Image (tube, rainbow, N blue to C red; front, side, top):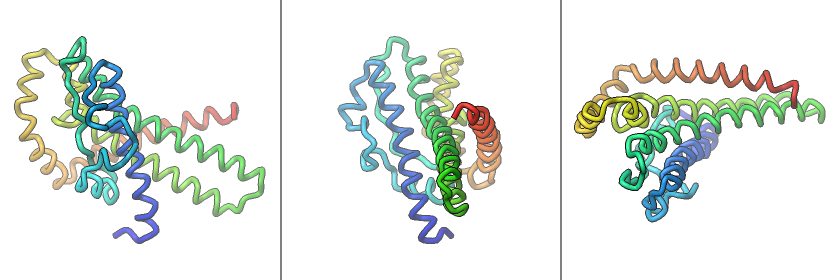
Length: 215
């Protein structure tokens, strides 16, 4: 069970990860010519516009969850399948960029702290919060890339599937929530998400380390 301090740290981190993810969906759909996200007030970082209560609580306490789906109308896209894939991909990309920037900024602050003579506990705290921010974003990214409707991964996969197969898959979208619940209860999601997060986190650390000589 999370203590008060952990909750106070996890709540804003979860809000930033979820809202950034949803804003990216809305922004890309809008750029593709769809006015729906703007009409529904989703082109904002205001948490009230995006949050699903259950999905947000899961994000805070487990590391992965969901928000209210961004309403889009693919009829406005020149290529509906490609447009849906680009909109779906925008969310995970936003989470990856936030994770990367979180670690990079923390490393820069720690290097600055060394010059300023900060207490080592300050540096450890900064990196600990940045690492948690990174993991929360990567959990949301990997979870949404799983190719099960209605997760983003299913729409990204749809770009390379034949139309007949893609639209057949979409017919079963309302039943997919039961598969998601089953995978959650059996711990399968934990294995998939944990493995994916560790791989990407390692890549981010290597990338940030490679940038250090230029900082």
